[in-house]
Image 1 (cartoon, rainbow over the protein chains, first blue to last red):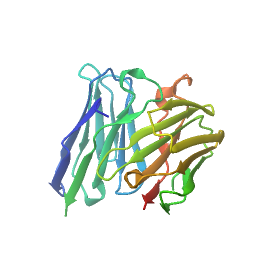
Image 2: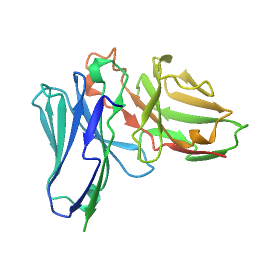
Image 3: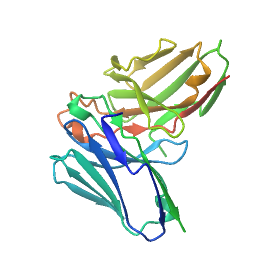
Length: 112
Length: 119
């Protein structure tokens, strides 16, 4: 969806390095979801953010939601090869329920 | 293991064939979705069913025909497809995000997809 833009499009990092992926919406966000996808497979739900300023963590992945800026960031600390994949943000921009769109995706490669 | 099951995993069909993709979930979700994903692109929303009724059709060509026989099943009937329809087709389910009182707590759960090749 053009309503959700992700950056960067791709990322190659050395194992152990930190990285950040951003997702920006052109419309008001009523929640933001992060997913991970391995090539050719289904999407794995990582976490959801509902309120402005909310921050959630799962293992070494932390996500934040800035409602005013209509954007979210996903931060991985001390990256591992298992973190490699495509990260997608998803939302219903403008609050159009059930019209769940995805951002353009960020392909992450972690070099051992 | 995913709680949304899609069959078949792979499908090769000719342009004159008729085939169907199937999706099943037993999580009590009342919203079900079809997405199409081309290589190196994000999933694109095709259809959404809410309480077994078609609520969203993202201007999908009529050669794709969705069906929701009951709250657990979602089908996608395919007829006279084109080679450019080759893609990964993903099914998802969630609580109905328009009606559930706490709908924003309900992420979409995805199946592993059907890899479709049209020859």
